Image 1: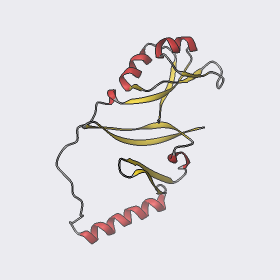
Image 2: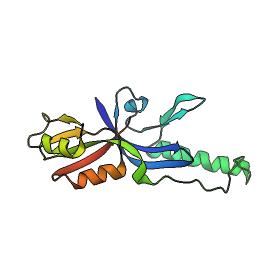
Image 3: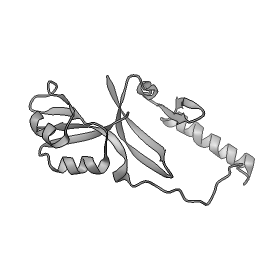
Amino acid sequence: GLAIKLLATSKKIGDQYSIMVSPKMIGMSHPLFAVNDVFNAIFVKGNMLGDSMFYGSGAGKLPTASAVAGDIVEAAKVSGNTGHFWTEEKLALADVSTVENKFFVRTTAAAEEVKAVFGDVKVMDDVVADEIGFVTEKMTEAAYKESAAKLNGIISMIRVEG
């Protein structure tokens, strides 16, 4: 019931911004779940707008050529006046170690060892012989790294959206 998607995420946290590009697991109820093949999407959650998604072709030689040609035509039409209003103010980026995520981890460690290190986790132990998978509660990147350093046998990790 999950799909792995390469997501670029940005979130305002207080007066700082958290930004990250990474593979993430998303559930079937998320609108980005069904985006496949040569399609791309932008999912925006706004305080006034609510949830909104922009979806369309975004990969492959024809959609890419079309986008590049459109950008060239637009640049020629505006000839130096793009109508964009940019500011020189630099954004304050949050330290990635403070960003919170859930993590899906594959390991050869026993479930008891995993729970001793990571605490309350959801364990999946009937998928692949001689390994288990588990999903952590929400924790910071720093806390994940600290806990992962205490557990032998980690095969891989991927972040879980939500």
